Length: 258
Image 1 (cartoon, rainbow, N blue to C red):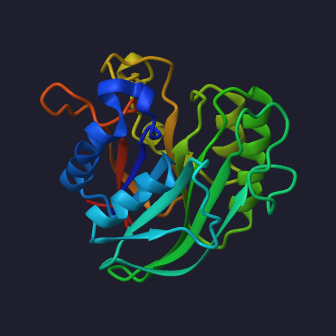
Image 2: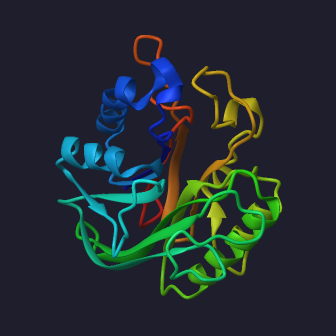
C-alpha cells in the first residue's frame, strides 16, 4: 500500500512561471507516475482540488462536510476507488473552536485543519484511520497546540492510524515529539527506516530543487502496518518542478515481509 503526502503550493498568480496554470499537468503526471493508493495533499484551493478530481478519475476525493470557501487552502485525502471503502470521516479546525469555519488561535497566521477518514482496505480487509493536515508556518506556539489536538484525535482512534502532512517543523521539534511517541503509538516512517537527517532529506525547495528549511513533510504510522520503503521524490519535468515541496511517499505492508 503506497501512501504519499504532497504539498501542491496554492494557486498564486505571483508565482510567475511556477503558477498553478503552468505546472498543474506536472502534478497530475507525478501522481500518476508514482500511483499512490492514498494521497494526502496540502494547500489545495477549491479550483486546484477540482482540477485533480477531474484529472485523476481513479481516485475518490474525500472532503466530508466541508464548507467550500475560495479563500481556503485545504488539506485533502484522495483514495483509489478500487482499493478502499470509505466508512466515515470528519474535518475540523485546529483551534479552540474546531467546529467554527476558519477559526484560529494562538499565534497561528492562518486557519489550519485536520481532515480524516476511516477506511477499509478491500485488498487486505484491514480497517484503519487516515488523516492529513498542514500546521501553521509562522506560529511556533500554534504548531504545538495544533499537534496536541491531533494527538488527542489519534488516541481516540481504534486500531491503526496513518497521519501525514506538512508540519512546518523539523524532526527535532516539540511538534514532532508531541505526535511521534509511545502515547500516540505513531512513529516517523523516515526514521523507522533510518533515513539520513540533513539536506538530502529536506522537503522544501522553493521551486529551485535546492533543499532548504528542514524535513517538514512527514508520514507518521502505527504498527501495523510495517514501513517497507520511504522515498522523497526529487523528479523534474524538463527542468521544472511540480511544486515547491518534494512529495514524500512510503510503501506499507500489513504483515512483515521476509
